Image (cartoon, rainbow, N blue to C red):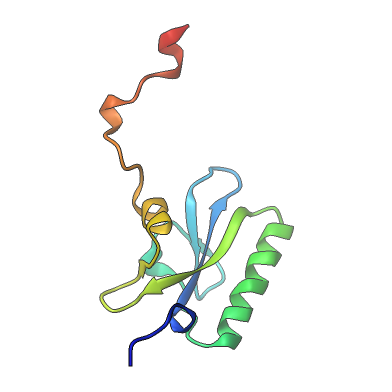
Length: 105
């Protein structure tokens, strides 16, 4: 039987408050910039634990935009939604084509 979205394993992601970098909550309670380091929740209780960790980290001013997201864990850890894939891998445009903000001054 195929898994539904509700049954997919989940990880906790957020943005570091100081740098804005996308980070992932790990099994040690730290934050990593690599999705592969993320703690995977496979049960409703584990998802609840991630949700509490997100609230605690937000309250401690460590992260913002925290979210528990679905992953495809078949071949490593890969976010299931395109938005999260983009957050994990970076911009979808060539950086050499970007304009400098100060170029128009």
